[in-house]
Length: 167
Image (cartoon, rainbow, N blue to C red; front, side):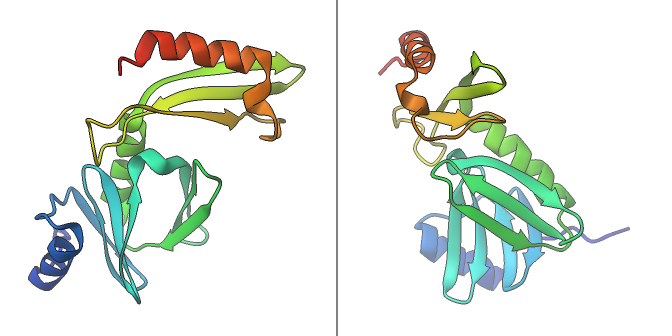
């Protein structure tokens, strides 16, 4: 039987100091500089400079690259990141579940030909009282530039905000 991975007392104390609260750890893996932990509202991982944080609502998409043994992600601002991991099965499952949990609504908008956009609203799990964060993503065969100005995207955004944005 395999031992469950968990943060040791020193890592928990460091993380508590970084976050300002006791961390609720849901899954743990091992990264290149030490522990990687999935919390309800973010992914945290040790770097040479301390703990880095990746709030789930900022992740546009992610995937496991088995050849590299790494979790790869892109944030909604287009930044890419990666993290080599060991013993990552539980953390990878949590990664997908928590990113999905931030999506309050999403609608694909067809723009003609093979072009499309996705209009979505995300909930910041680090602050559930924060307003929804609205975002436009490029679909396949589509460049991001100018998507927010497309009439169909504007119409979809207005409709979804009317339905979902209660603030």
